[in-house]
Image 1: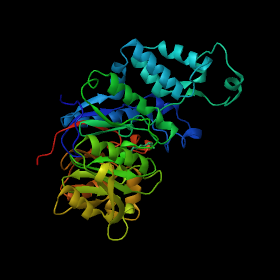
Image 2: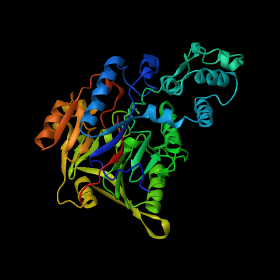
Image 3: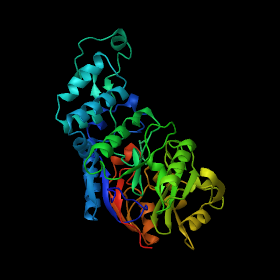
Image 4: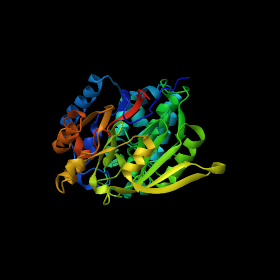
Length: 410
Ligand SMILES: NC(=O)NCCC[C@H](N)C(=O)O
């Protein structure tokens, strides 16, 4: 049976992609919680939505089917029993497994249509929106001034991270920070219960329950047998090992390149500093390269007796040449490598390009130095508006989860 998920590269023509249109969750962020919510500023919602609609239209204009996370989840919850089970889980993961607040939240959320309920869960539930029949002292007195029972999910529009499609399967991710952990429960329900995916042979390479942390921004599908993964602020060596074991056992993937990157907010995932844009071309933020273009990379292959063999290599170009079987690799530096322009444009996701076909990318318009350089290297660049979307600290790759891409010609 043909899986509804099929992604064997970063660059094959994009056929189907999942997005989330930013909603009220953006307006439930205020300065005191910015840091914990993993954003650096508060986007102006009407403009963020306009920009996001233009991004989605750019993808459609180039032949991609755009699916929205909120619609996929709504359809997955069509059956009342599944909706009830989902509500129990999301309320428990929000901190209320039982009790008056649990009951109040459930009654409140069930008063909406399923679509509005999904949007409400993403937006967050304020304390003054529900009435509880009885509240314990802890519920009344602890965190009295905190306004939410259910926190908003302002990062939900970065649909890259909650999961990642690899080959005919998916990783449903255990995310690092509390602010994002509930988001991958949505993916679990979509894969299990949305008719497009349920019982259609989708392999789950790794689900959200093992201990190791992993996020899709670190998972780069370089080919039909090579995966690159960031060892980063968001993805641990443990999760990478578990994923490699699963892929080597169950899929055609035989190479996992784990690349160590700085562990900080500006470079939280591998795709904030390194993306594939053509058969032999990549964007790279110069700050991850030591003299002579070196990184710390660990190349993993299936070894003997189910073990994994690991070699340490450092020359990024050589690693990529070998993994992709190419005579040369063009590494295009963000901001031309300038000491001010490169970090400025990287901060606003100048390295975070989304390839929609080999040599064709979508980027933020604000990173004009990097965009011009891409053009000079022969890349076709579709720029999208980015004043507000970029405030969430993610770019076009972060905002998209490819579900189907065309295979590359061999
Ligand atoms: N793949 C990505 O780099 N996604 C960007 C996620 C930004 C979001 N504010 C976060 O910190 O998780």
